[in-house]
Length: 173
Image (tube, rainbow, N blue to C red; front, side, top):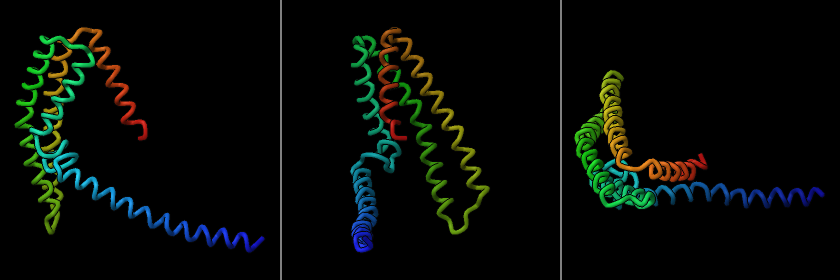
């Protein structure tokens, strides 16, 4: 009986070793895949969400908007009105995005210094926080304006789809 237990322990020892070795290898491979994806202009990159900068992010958002308008069977006049609302939103967001990029660079520089100045970090944080609120206000206004273009049924269809998508994205969290 002890021999069988020893064999099981020895067997687990070998397979356990390979399992433990596989974890860092898989993590490393995942890191390099994500990094290559970001370097190719996708994912999180130098331009922020969507990588590559605001123009790629805008193109991504326009494709998402087209899909949403397809889902609610938007008319041509609704499409035109909503696309104009979101074009205005992107223009209003441009200076906010530029300010955020500048502050982010300053934040990285401050944290990379030989000595980190807590007061400087706090000052940058205080400058960044209002930008998030400002961007949220611009986005909310665009959403409200677009909601006035869609019918109640279209809004309900859209909210149902967004709720389902949100559920799928957060299922494992």
